[in-house]
Image (cartoon, rainbow, N blue to C red):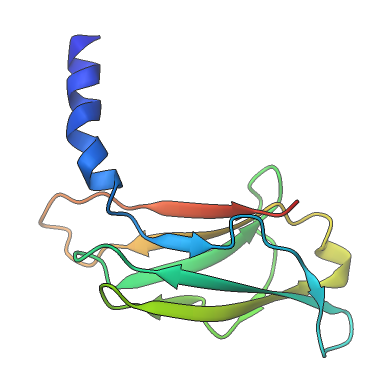
Length: 122
């Protein structure tokens, strides 16, 4: 138990420097395209060691839901922000539970922690 707590204390400072994605509880809106709904998200990169992020949409059982966005895998410099829209089919709107962003690590030689941030649809 003592080693678990010590390991957790070592990891907490690293986790504090993860990226951010807002809003926490996004909502789908009608889009200008027929049979599609849209939500607008914003990301902020607080990690010096990560430049690339990937976006995904999941249902409640973590099955991927098809989506369209101008950013699926994108570069986001340290302390930079980006706004992006995510579109899904209207028929998938009630199935979509999470929209997530995952940091993509480039250098496998150095130890690093990949972070995943998810927002949940109400």
